[in-house]
Image (cartoon, rainbow over all chains, first blue to last red; front, top):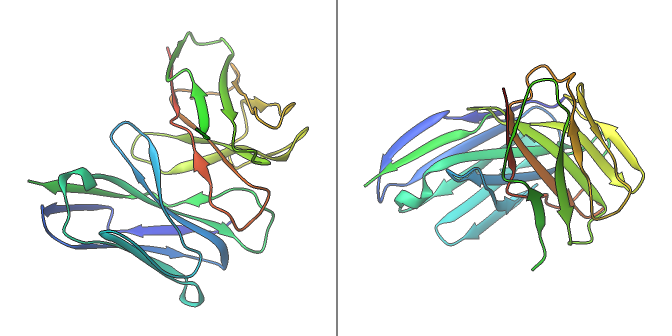
Length: 111
Length: 113
């Protein structure tokens, strides 16, 4: 099946810093989503971005489908940005059988 | 408000007992999914259903069963055959399209002792 690799696995930053999270995937996709999982386990849908660039406040994301990667940018980090960020993809060559998740990037924003 | 409701939030069971986790959605989505998350790991797909009365095994279906008798409901039964049932279980749904985002419920944390 399709492989999803996220980097870095862990990231510790000071409040106000910027960060870039990366997601590489092994095959063509027709669905790519970025999620933020908060300390209570809730998965927050950040972006649905199988291709192109989107921005939402301090967050933006870019997917270059032809090169099989996506980037999530967080600017002016706040402590509430802490948590685990997941990239998830759906392989375009198979049935609509759900998303395959990466292992996540654990982000800690220190005050 | 439209959304996905999972209940209960926390569930405790003794080893050897079957347990059923509830997932209800009022988004009018055709497709529904069950995922499992272990500590420090990503999510893995257990079962999915694209339409009522039809469902397919995901990557880790052994020891689990599902039903899809109604569009709104997709309950997951964790059977005694599941060797390591303690985990965080998340339900999701999306419209009947490959190209649409999945929406997740808030999860059920199952502990089996």
